[in-house]
Image (cartoon, rainbow, N blue to C red; front, side, top):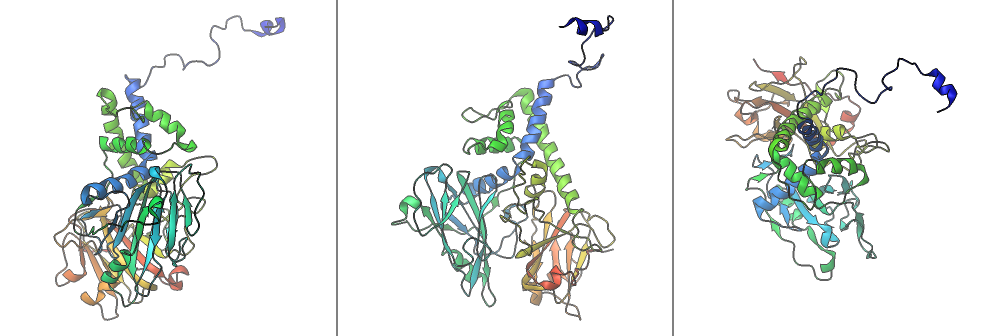
Length: 473
């Protein structure tokens, strides 16, 4: 140190600048290791939300239906509450399958649109990043084709005649809807769905027939767990998938709470207790965020219907910017739902509107009865549907009727008004004489979602407005 610098020192100075908290400071909790375990576990749940949700779909399918990779679940009927899934639709039959690319590429043959049915849906990776859309808005443009799912790091030459779909993960899932076209039936849509094919590329010269399982009648539990099973699922995901650069910090923190590939996951003592608290708190945190998000996105300024699909700044649902991975915003979408398009089109084929409040701006309540008047001429080229979910689980509500929603396809079975509109009711009790128009909620907090399939210009230019939900006295 120079003589000049020595001269500037205060002779009464006893401590350096910084280096420790203010005098008298004490740690805020008695056990910092338990506190760190809680913090890292909490953030892990939020971070892993999309991966755990898609892993639960896979694990639930394997357990419920006895399927394995490359088998296809093709539902002969629309979903009932026995399909315990995040905000599923109950109007069009589902198709789903899973594969593992660790043994090499897999071929998925998509049928072309026919005069009976058309296929819509997404193929996603282990983090629910959509790697391909299918159908008229997908890579095949409705003409069908052979999608080739290519694992990370695959170096061999690509054969011709395929739609190449590279991916950054090994485990892949898809969920499609087989949509019956005008004049067709659910049976037609089911038959169409069974023209799909899925097999390893190595078997392409002579593939075995694809095995189909009807998922309509069995209980299919797919919902994430908010207990220690959540962390077991995280462990199972990261034990298979390559680590992406965006996730390296989190992977390092997971190791500090015993979630590390190649090592057994058996949390004990205070770490286990911290994780059990953290996963419950993370659930309530994501519940609150998802509810608040909708209040910022009302479709009509003078109505209480919110637009459910809220993409990231790039118009997709990855929530990865050049500078950040937005795990909170990502959980806003993937905590209540799954399977989103690769890019959100300006006019998506299906519109999702959530009835956040009643006509007086009051949040909906559990145990109350409500009415929605649906006008005669809703501007859709296909149909509309109203589905009521339990906001605690974002899944269908079990009831003796097994009725989770109603749609324009069922109007002929309902009582209509003189002007051609129809009043739909939802709540714990049916209005007298209007049971056909009622969706039971069993006292749950309702989460009403109105879907518009093929919304037309009057919706997009907002000359059409949907009435608000009304509380019944």
